[in-house]
Image (cartoon, rainbow, N blue to C red; front, side):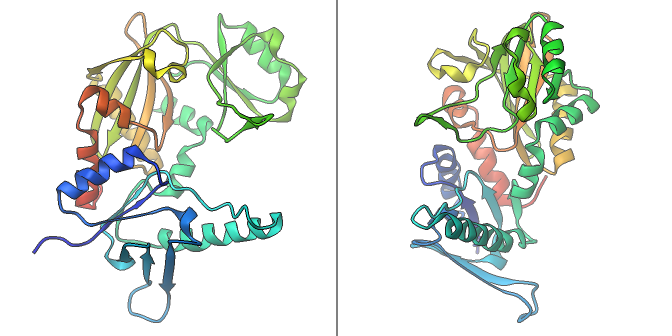
Length: 319
């Protein structure tokens, strides 16, 4: 008789990357229970008991079509879940309700001690701080572009004046609208003359531009590394996916070991790294996305990324 323990997949309704992994799990006859925290009012029910059974916790998650005993979960794929906003409630009630879901449902799931998490959301959150990422990368011997994080306009202007080209990058992607239009934080060039006193309000990240010839997106799954070279000619290749071309490459062993050590530092099982390649072939570390997109790379290159993800979730243990 096979292993009937299910894999929990927490993600939003439309997630093609999660769909690819679930398809691979289905091929392996692994039970899957998919849910989204935003469905708590309509199609999601959670129950947990503490102190009334031999186990530290007993509980269940139910969706409109599935139910899972939380003590029997094999692994948790924490992909791109959306927390409820309760927009039909008043501001204070919505804030209260959202906190109860995050600390109720979230707390129950975080109490799970047995399953493999890919990745645990608290570890994702810890790894999402760019200054911490930069320091760890440098400590591990990776080449990092000169970078300044400051809310001092004078320091920012001196930094910008001291390098041929400098970009501004957001410290954290955040949903943002201006006059009803959604905006995205690209890596945008900035000059010393453009830096004004508004920098005082919050810390900003400024970074010297790498004289690159290509980018590399690296996906690490367990101890497997997939590296794809991205040709674009753009400062930020995310601006136009239709203009990109791809090729599969092998990383130097020392780079692969350093990226694995970077994930280990934050307790992550998987992550996506962005590197730049300069004219001499040197690799520059840019950033880590603990839960980055990779589905389009599998479709473009044929790399077995989703299959390796599914195998890791099926095993239910970190390599």
